[in-house]
Length: 119
Image (cartoon, rainbow, N blue to C red; front, side, top):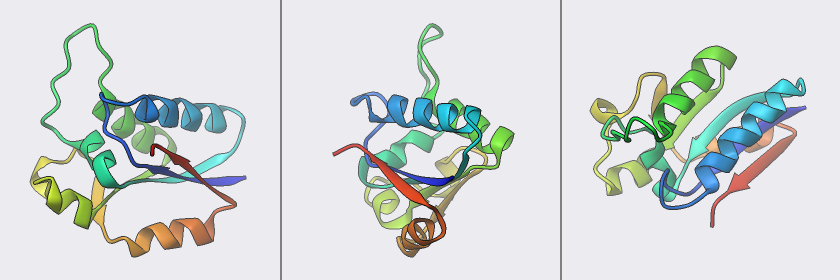
């Protein structure tokens, strides 16, 4: 099964980011393909270089970067949501991309499921 993920919450103020990441890992482990993660609303903050978590905490931006590198998952941030939060190409992690909302429609069309995390 091909899966797209929509993540609408920030990395440390809501469990949605951790849950989305764990879901993606589990799906891949079971043999499914996670095609893309589309970050929307506060979800775009999941891929900023500005995060500097304590040594004993999880590094959510690094997790998304590694998921993309290791499994070919596209990590995409909505341009409108990014602009509203002062996020541009200079402040996102390697492997992530800022793109238009139309890309979310494409993800929904080309995958068997679009799973949403966050309010």
